[in-house]
Amino acid sequence: MIQLAGLGRYLVRRAITFIPTIIGITLLTFTIAFYTPADPARAWAGGQKARPEVVEQVRKMYHLDEPFWTQYYFFMRHILSGSIYSPVTHNNIIVEWMQGFIVTANIAVLATFFTIILGIPLGIIAALRKDTAIDNAVRLLALIGYSTPSFWIAYIFVWIFYDVLRWITLVGVPIPSRIITGLFVIDAIILGEFNILDAIVSRLLLPSFILAFISFGGLARYVRNTMLDVLSSDYILYAHARGLPPFRVWKHALKNSLIPVVTVILFMFAGLLSGAIITETVFQLPGIGYKYVLAINNFDIPSIILYTLMTGLFIVITSLLVDILYAIIDPRIRL
Image (cartoon, rainbow, N blue to C red; front, side, top):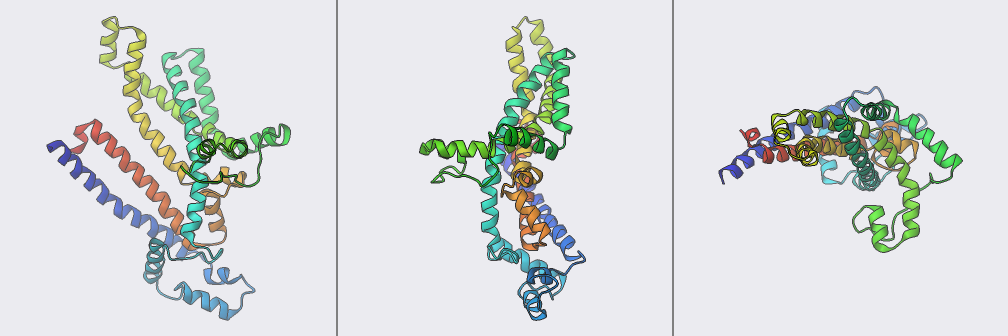
């Protein structure tokens, strides 16, 4: 009971610190938009050719003729209540964000899956074969994936798999006839719609793999370094001295080395959920990242604030989950 109470107090302290973080994120975003040398009312009313009366009507509708704090309160109140509409698309920004989030979530899940099945095994192999040709090859491959610009990889892969092989499509986002889990691949399998499944794979597989290709290198290097630290620990040396089989020693080392790796994977997944701007733009996928770019280009302040707010929430919630995990594993953190 005492341990649970300590964990509860620790989580409350962490949650309280997140509130000013979220407020600061939205305030900074709005401040940048507020002091940008442009007239959002005129941009939303149609540009330079907009009639003065229309511009003035838009200015009053969005309280753009009022002081900074009044505008900030207006935007935040309506964004949090879900009652504000985009001045550019005239759609509810919450609905638009949800539509983009579904697409981004599918890409993020597939990309994270590919990152895990590539990064973790390669990192383990590199650690167990330290300073060998295999280790050098894994580190070189990880370095290439980690440092190569994502847009360059995307265009190369598009040229190979679309222009040459014709294995993928670049138009639309096929979805199953009914949404069950929210993950298009799984829903198509459950419903038995294998023609839709083939279309989904043709559309989402390549962008997901590209995101994994630029992410797995960092994960592989982290797994390798963490595994090497654990393998040099005293209890691992003692296990070797007792004559335990190498497989059992590696199993214990792997379990302990993967604890911090979970942190990297969670933050990586949160970053992907926030929108892969470059990849979604290259593949014209209407996810959060693509919509974010459109909002910035159109000076859509409500949408920009909402997308920034949700990105901050993803990072904050992920940080809280990591804190919970570490607090459960290591009671010293709660002190």
